Structure formats: structure tokens, C-alpha cells
Image 1 (tube, helix red, strand yellow):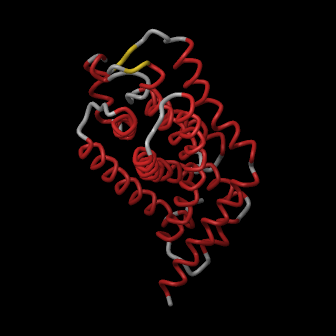
Image 2 (cartoon, one colour; image 1 turned 120 degrees about the vertical axis):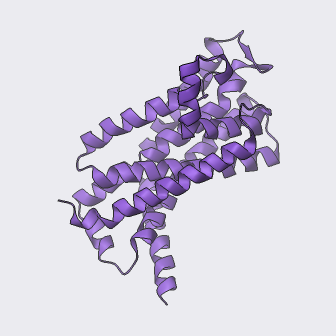
Length: 254
């Protein structure tokens, strides 16, 4: 009976997040504009003759642009946690007979669902205009994107759990996302970077998201696939654990 309540609670939270996502069509449009500008302006117009790993630069950065969309879309879901606090929706959820773990899973999976919809739009556009992907490649991109999105959503929810204002969340989000993006291998090849950049990129969990996506889409990677997947799983577990602990303290924060 208790397990049924937890499952129903998770489903209800996911559905609520999807309803919010459906109502905000402007967010869907704005979220895919930046990745498309990177892909077609920087990828094609500014680097027409650049070849990396035997592929045109636009093809090389395509996995990085998919990951970019996952990063910025997923972490933004922490902002809705602040909205829930402000309008007391979160208080109503906190008094419900579900655990904080279930609350986290509902919020996280709801955020991942929205991020996956946006990612799939970028993927389809890239499939027709950048590089053709096979069915198994598309499935692989979806699987890695799901795992990576869950990891990034956890970061966003943890920030949203401790922040009190939307302005504060925006500042912290920018401080986290842009270094994660630029110090990954989304726009450049790690092997050609300086030693300091390579060290930072190796520590950056987002690097492994880009690297395994590049392996799937163009059969090129810097790290072994198993190492990238292990890093993503490990960081997802660590960040999920931290976020659950933050959720457990939300009701006692002033």
C-alpha cells in the first residue's frame, strides 16, 4: 500500500511538470534557438574548412550541441522549485504522504521528460541537416541523453533547493553551466587543448556526456565508452544523493 502511494505520488508530480511544460510553449522555442545558432552559424558559417577527426566541424560539434541543449534545459528546472516555494505549492507536496526521495524522483523525471522532448527536436533537425543517424544510434543518443539529463536536473534541483530568489538561482546557474559547457569538449578537441584545459575537462562530468554522444554519432571519442558511462552513472548517483538530502531539509529552512 505504501509503495503504491509512492508510485502514485511520483506519477502525479511528473504529470504536473509535463502540464507546466506544455503550457509554456515560448520556453520550448527559446530553448532550441541557442543550440541551433551554435550548430548552423558557428558550425557552418564560421568554420567551413575546419576538419576534426575526419569530419567537418559542424558534424564534430553536433553531439556537443545536443549535450548543450540537455545542460541548459535540464538545470533550469531548479528554477521551478523556487516558484513552487513562492506559491506554496511545495508546502502542499511536503505534507503529502510521500517520501522526499519520491518527491525528488517525481521532480527529476518530470524535468528530464521536458528536456528529452527538446533534445529530440534538436536530434531530428541534426539528423536531416547535419549527419544521418541510424536507428541504433538514435536509441543510443536517447539513452545517454536521459542519463545525462537526470544528472544535470539533479544539479538544478539542488541549487533550487537552497536558493530563495530567482535572481540568485540565475547567477548560480550561469556560474555552473557556462564553465561546464566551455570546459567540456563540446566545441573543441581535448587533445589539442592546453594541459590545464585537459585537466579541467577531465574533472568536468559534462565532458563525458559529450564524449560518449560523439562516439555514438561519429564513432570518435577521447575516452573509452565504458569510462564515460561509469563517470555519468557515478556523478548521477552522487548528485541525486546530495539533492535528496537537500530536499529533506527544505521544510526547516527559513
